[in-house]
Length: 260
Ligand SMILES: C[S@@+](CC[C@H](N)C(=O)[O-])C[C@H]1O[C@@H](n2cnc3c(N)ncnc32)[C@H](O)[C@@H]1O
Image (cartoon, rainbow, N blue to C red):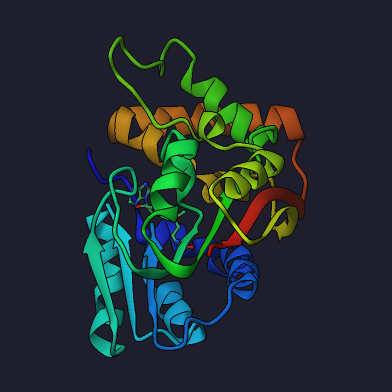
C-alpha cells in the first residue's frame, strides 16, 4: 500500500488539528501578491485559508498522497490562484517563493539540516519559511506506537523501512541554530503544548490512526494493521488507564524565519 493516508480519518479531529495551523499562520507576514507553497498540504482547506490569509497571487499545495489531493482538488477549482500538485517534500525544490509553509508534514522526511537548507534556497529575496512539527514522541500515544511496531509480530522484516518522525524532529533550539546558520534575519522557534479534551483514552487511538500510524498501516497492510491496533489499544489503556474525558497534552514545535 503506497498511500495509506485516509482523509476522512484525518479530518475526525479537524478542529483540534487546525489550532497549530492557525498559530503557525499568525507567525507569518502576508506576501501581498506573492507566491506561497504549502508542503504536505493534505486535504487543501487549510491551504485555501493560507492563500487568502497571506494575500497570495499564487499558492501551490504539494502532497504525495493522491487520496489527500483528490479531496484538495475542489479548492483548486473554486479558489483563483490556488492549485495542487503531486510531489515529495524529500525532493521538492523551487525558486522565487515568498513563503514556504509546512504544517504537520516535515517530520515524515528525514535529514532536517539538508531539508531546511533546500527549502531556504527555494525562497525569493525577503522570503519566509514556516513549519510546525509534532514533538510528542515522549507521550505514551507515540512511544507505544513505536514499541508495538517493534514487537515480533509487527516488526519490519530485514530491508523494510518506515519513516521515523521521532528521529527526524530536532529540538526548537537546534531549529533556531539552523535557521540562524541559513541566514535568517528574523525568527521565532517555540514549543507549544496543545491540550485537547477527548471523550476517552480510546479516542487517542482514533487520533493517531489518522496520522502517526499511517506509515505503520502502509507497511503492515490492513489485516496485520487491525491486529496491531488491538495490541496498541491494549497497551495504551494499560499505560494510561481508562479516563473519561481524557486530556491529551500534545507538544508541537513551531518555527518561522525571514531571510534577506
Ligand atoms: C498530518 S497531514 C497535514 C496536512 C495539512 N498540512 C494540515 O495541516 O492539515 C500530513 C500530510 O503530509 C503528507 N506527506 C507526508 N510525507 C510527505 C512527503 N514526503 N511529501 C509530500 N507530502 C507528504 C501526507 O500525505 C499528509 O497529507
